[in-house]
Image (cartoon, rainbow over the protein chains, first blue to last red):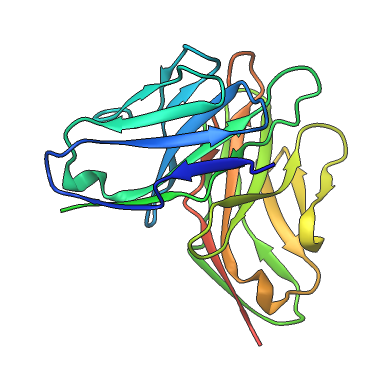
Length: 115
Length: 115
């Protein structure tokens, strides 16, 4: 199993450009999450999904959109990138059904720089 | 609202000595508690969790943590530190309430084990 994978690993954008980050998991998890990590801030939840076709806002959703068209994929979009969105982005997934283990499994991260 | 405090930005310990990384939490109900570790340029790896039962939980790589409800703490410990334990450690909390899936992370504590 590859677990949680993220594409791309690195990206540099100019202010105003758009991009999509892709997260894929092969563990058949219902729940998926997008976080951003900034120095001294820990991880903050951007958006999450509790199943295919559903999404919900987290702590810092402004400037981001998400889609969950397939159970195994969770996309994070930036429509008009701003320097404040320079960060490391992590995707995670979890299983919440019978026999759940509660913990989330994380991808390797995408380092995004907006100039 | 739920929150996590990790009062120390950095902890230095000599190799072979015991280590403690502190965590206190706040939730409206009863908590699920987690510790994750992050090595440089990597994603977060699950270390251990408290869900229910014994207040002392054991996890990966010889780490353990004690849930203390009266002090709302979940400190991470290891009897004998290794240089390879040097990393960034995150404590996280989740409310047990139904429909509550979100993890809230602390800001992280950088552990440096000195040879």
